[in-house]
Image (cartoon, rainbow, N blue to C red; front, side, top):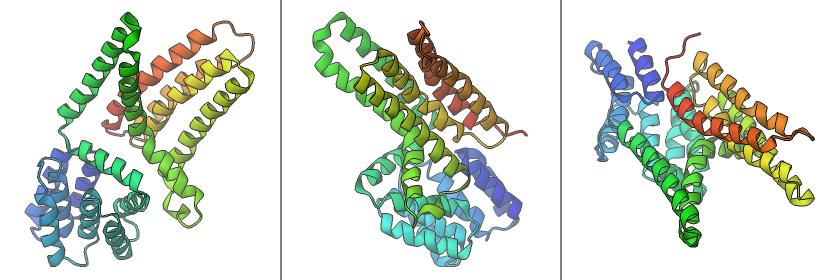
Length: 313
């Protein structure tokens, strides 16, 4: 029975909602009263149903299984999506008291703790909503954004007077893409800096926080050098390092094993031209960084693909 619950949880964690529901249904066929499969099935259904009926269903389930860590955790995510971060913290803490090994509850507690900040709470609610959209619709929005960005760029090149309108729109899209990849590791890094919340950030989340924060720190350092020395080379390298944040973040979006290793190698290859471009005397620094930026953009698509790949080895 535990095997079906864990399988449903694995599929749930990777966003494979039909598979998660199928695994939970298989478990419930063996034991219709299993609270883990019931909770996971309800929360997975949340992504197939645009309404909030799943939250009320969890509330009913909580009355039946008040000592279930699975149900408490699901209730915490429901509260978090509804903007009740304080209530979510309580549910996640109770879930961890019942099962200190639950990474699902620990992940929720981290997000709920960060959601005490009003700005992060708004960002989190948006991405939780975006995550509920059908996969094809999400990819359609991303593709439409890329097409619109290219159209705005071409329109600005043809008529520079449009810049006051097109540049803010283009910057908003770039900001959305960067935020979608960096908001979690960078906010995790902020929690890690606080001694009281540092124990929450561990394992792959801590690695992601340090690597992404380090990459951003490198980009900011080179930007500062460019501003002080008026070095065009430093400015170009800073741009390349900033773009590298996307594939660096994608490394830790991928499942541990072969997908994560593949993304790590891709990111290392994308970083090499930036390292070479930073060497004084290299005359093609702009071309090298340009190639790295293109690889970083492609890396977002590679990362999304590898994130849905079954780990093997």
